[in-house]
Each structure stands twice: as C-alpha cells, then as structure tokens.
Amino acid sequence: MTGAQAIARILKLEGVEQVFCFPLTPLLEALADEDIRPIVARQERVAENMADGFSRASCGKKIGVVSVQDSAGAENGFAGIAQAKTDSSPILFLPGHPGRDRAGVHPTFDAVENFRGVTKYASRIPTVHAVSEHMRRAYTALRSGRPGPALVEIPRDIALGELRGGLDYRPVAPLRAAADPAAVREAVKLLLAAERPMIRCGQGVLYARASAELTAAARLLAAPVMTTLLGKSAFDESHPLALGTGSLSEAAPVPDYLGRCDALLAIGTSLTKTIFGSAIPAAPRIVHATNDPADINKDCAADVGLVGDAKLVLAQIAEEIRAQTGGRGRAGLAEVEAYVAAVKKPWLERWIAKQTSNETPLNPYRVMREFMDATNAAETIVTHESGGARDQLVPLYASVTPRGYIGWGHSTQLGFSLGAAMGAKLACPEKLVANFSGDTAFGMVGMDLETAVREQIPILTVLLNNSAMGNYDRHIPKASAKYGTRFTSGNYSEVAKGLGAYSERVEQPRDIRPALERGIRCTKEGRPALLEFITKEEPDIPYRKR
Image 1 (cartoon, rainbow, N blue to C red):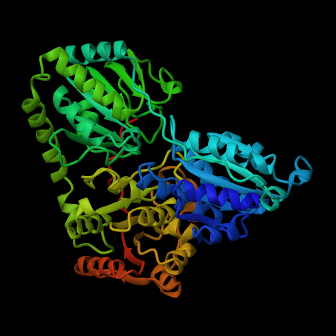
Image 2 (image 1 turned 135 degrees about the vertical axis):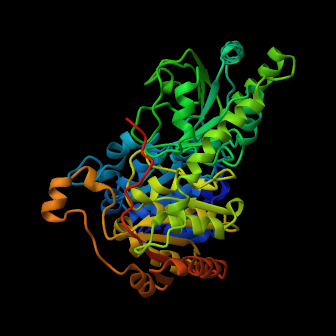
Image 3 (image 1 turned 120 degrees about the vertical axis):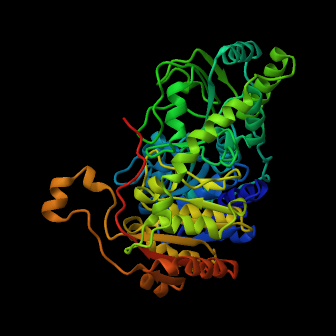
C-alpha cells in the first residue's frame, strides 16, 4: 500500500464518498481504488466552495474533502480555504507538495506555512508511517470545538512511498462538552430576572443540530429569537417567536427587539463585531454560550460565559429553567408572540408592492416572491450571493428547516454560491437547491456551471442581471460616475446554454413564474438550470443603521 492509497483508505473509513478536486492531485488514482468519486471542478476555489457547501448542508455530520496538486494548485486554492476559516466551516484540504527534499527550497510553495493562518490545523506528512496519525489529528480538529478547515500536505514521495506493516486507523468520533452547571444556573437566574430577554442564534446551533433544543428553550424562556446571517435557518422563521435574521440588511423586528431587550442569550455565535451582523446594544446583560472560549469577552463583555456544544448547553438551560420555575417556564409567552406579530406584520406588508410589481426591467423582489410561492421551503435549500442578491433575499426569505438556507459571508467572496449550491445538492440530493446570484458574481465563476452539467449536479441558478455591480455606487460614486467602473454586460443565459445547462432569459413579469416552474422541473429531471432575470437596480434595501 502506498501513502496515497493509505490516505484514500482512511477517507473511505471516514465515510467519504467523493473528493472535490482539480487534477492532478496526489490522490486521484488512489481514490479510484476505493470507489471514491473524484469531482473535478474547473478551478480550485470552486472545488473548495463545493466541499464547503457539502459540509454546511450536512451540518458537519459529513465533511467535505478537497484535494489539489502542489505548487500552482495549492496557491490557487488559498481563497476558498480562507472563506471556510472566516465562516467556521469544516473542510479537509489535501494539497500536494513537490517532495520532502524540496521543502524550504525557493520557489517551492509551502502550503503548511502559507495556510496556517487560515486553517484550524495544518501539517505536512513527514513519513509514510505517519499518515494515520496526521489524518487522525486533522479529523479530530474537524470534529471538535469551533469548526474550521484542516490541512494535511502530501509530499510526492510520501504519496508514492510504500507503507509496510498495514494500516492502523480508526474513524474519529466527535468530541462534545457541556457547560459548567454552576454557570448555567447563574445564566438562567439572570435570564429569568429580565423583563424582556431575547435569543441571538448563530450557526453553532446548526452544527450541533440543536434546532429542537433551541425552540424548547425559547418557549420556556418566552424569548423571541433572531439568527445571525450564518445561523439563518437554525430557527423556524414561521414560528411566532421568530424575529428574522440580523445582517447587513435585516428584518425590522430584529433591531426593534434588540433595542428593547434587557437580557441577551447568545448561543452558537461569536458575537464578533462585523458589518455583516446586527449591532449589539450596550444595555442588555449578556449570557454568551459558544464552543470556543476565545470568543467569550472578545468583542462583547459577557455577564455569564458558557463554553460547550450548543445542543448540550441548550438542554442544560431548558432543564434549569424548569427547575427554577417549577416546570412552568417564564410567564408571558403569549404577550411576546403577539408583540412580535404586531411588529412583523406591517414590515412584511411594506414590501408587497415591490413583490408584486409589474415594472420592467423586473424588480428583484418580484422574482424572489415568485420563487417563494413556487417552492416548498421545507424541501428546498437556498443560498445567496454577495451584494444585492444577499441583501434583498436574507430579510424576506422565510426558512423553516435547518440548513434550508445557507447564509454566509464574513469575508463575502463573490462567486461562492455556485460551488456551495453544488456541494449542498450532493449532500442533500432529495432537495431542490437554488443559488441566487448577481451578474458580477456569475462572471467570476460561471464557467463552473459546466461542472454541474458534466458531474450531473442538478442545481437551479437564479441569476439577477442588472448589468451592474450592485450597490457599489454607495462606495465609489465619483469613479462610477466618471468611468462607469461598476457596470457590466453579457447574456448569461447564452453562456449557460453553451455550457450544456438548461437556460432561459426572462424580461417580462408574466414570464417569471412559468420560467421558474420549467427550471425546477428541469432540475428534477437531473439537469442543472440557469434562469437569467433582467432586473432593475433596486436601491430600497433594509440596511441596518450603523
């Protein structure tokens, strides 16, 4: 058995069914020996985005794996791994290396050194007999604590070297811990003493698969729930306690309740100060629960800190609420639900005119509304693109099931949604998977729609083409006015057709719903589809005040 074959066998033991790649990787031939499907993208970043989307849609239960060749492949792969690090997504990255004798010799690219800042774990396999221990360390990092990418660099001579004595490897089990019981008691005492507590939920709840526990805790606490951008879908947004998502753009009930709450339970979120998250008022007392102690007191001082897995911690909190209230929970649930409904109703009504608009070019809100009406949110996975597509969709799309919406974007790399959607479809083939993209983002990665065609990954791309880099006029008004720096052009439905996908170009409001129905039907028949909607620039976006 060679080193490469040993790694492929370990991947098989870990339940890996496909590896996303761009050849030539050191593992390609060895993967075939284990009947592990190589899925070849047209560029390294998209392959990594596919692995990332696969892990997210699986809620970390299955880990996306990506492998690229040494030198240029590893160099090109930096962006996708950096995106996974900033968004805390667990993917296993297996780049090649020219060989141990070239380590440290210019111009050999050292992936371990260069990727250390954007990975949770990074190592180079030093000998063939060390393959098992390095893979074991990587999978332990992937399955414990705060999620993030792990890198194992494979020198060429290690891949080709002979492993004698057989392979000694056992699959790695997840490591989870509960919070300090004394701290939980203190936290619940604080929350029950508050007049208007609320819950801020991040993607840690998704990775812990703790949506049921979150719902139970929210009802016992009589506290409304907002989600972060990355945590969107962790709480059913049709629930009476759902405030919606807080992001760069956000649903009105979120800032409303943040402004009136006097205690905040932050669960599965880092509480990092970022333009892509809701402002955190200074007034409320904060209970901060996360699986990464580095986040406690990082940007926000916590009155009580809880370190542990979100599922276990929420179960502890629910049990303690029952203990401190004689099993009744906190009073006032009906009143809180009525208040949320009263704030939400007029805000949703404010968008009806845009969602039913007959104007041309099309209003993007009309396209999004037609999509929501044409689909079953419980059987759909939706993801957004950076910019206008995200900012218009996030506040109004109601996700009702965990990972029914994949929110992302601490670093907001344009083009991520295409690969993420393909990975999500492979993780959940029974679901309709759609990515809402802008024309600029598709221009960066659109050739990889051919990957979806070739690899038979039937996703739906909803392309909102307003012939501009949306909303950049707010940042570069002089350059845009003088040189037109934010304007683009192109007929992307023709590009998609040339790549082998089903495509339509839609310009009239009456054609939106029929086109969506044909595109969805096409994906059910196993063919990827792109629907290009010619839209106006829509400046009315509910950006949060900052």
